[in-house]
Each structure stands twice: as C-alpha cells, then as structure tokens.
Amino acid sequence: MSLIKSNVTLNTSPVAQAVIGGKLLRHGCSMVAANKREIEVYRANLRRVPAGLTARFGASGPVTWNTFSGGFFVVLTVPFTVDDDALRRSAREHGVLWTPMHHFHHGMTSSRQIRLSFSLLDDASIDEGLDRLASFVTTESRAVGSAA
Image (cartoon, rainbow, N blue to C red; front, side, top):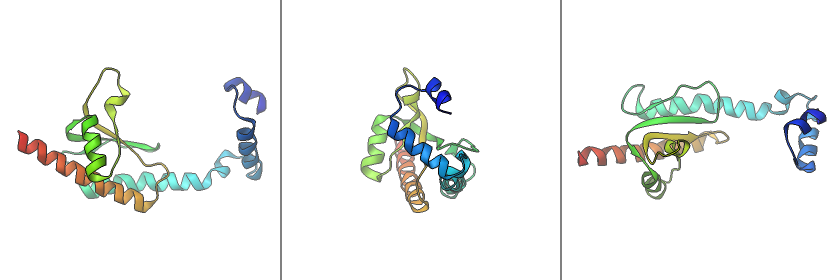
C-alpha cells in the first residue's frame, strides 16, 4: 500500500499517513469498516435532503433538483437569477449559504442554479438550512414576480 500511495501522491504528511494507517489497522484494513459511521450519516442525509426539498417545494414546480444516489451536494434550479448578490442577500437576510453554480463554469456570472452541500450535517441543521433556503427562495421569487 505504501508503494501505491507514493506513486499516487507526493509529500503527504507522515502524521496524516500514520493516522489513516492506524484507523485502517483498527478496522481490519477495511476502508468500509473504517468509515462505517460516516457512511451511515451520508446515506441518511441522502434520504433527508430530497425528502426535505419535496416537503418545502413540492414534487413538481418552479424549484427542481437533480436526483442523486450518492455524493455530498444537490443542485437546485430556481425561478430567478442566481448571482453573487443573491448569495449575499441569502446569507445576510436568511442566514443560509450555498454556492452559485456559475462559479463552476468559466465566464459565467449568473445562472438559475445553486449547489447545496449536506455532507456531515445533522438532521436539525439540514432541516433548519432547508427552512432558511425556502424562505430565501420565496422572497426572491416574489421580488422577481413583482418586478415583472
């Protein structure tokens, strides 16, 4: 394993290697066993987030999201333009952060998509974050509707 690791990465901290090595030794050299607790949290969050989105936005409507079977993020499409100013309003007025998807595309300054992270959040944090997000989306949607 040490030889494979040295071929894949450079200059990884010896302390970090020792910590990971110790964790693997304690769990029979099984990555699955060593990460069982984290896997359970991730799987629970993968169920909670789409259920929470459906509860707040409905199964069909102006807010949609990607279906996922793994990962730490969900991408929402919202009925208004998302830019850095919208992110600032969301943080300041609703206390919720997300990443504008245009940050992942060269040359874009806005889109209608946001990326939510939910990897190691507990149930209460996910629920509170989704409530705050729903409040932000409602407020922004109304502002767009009144400007039209």
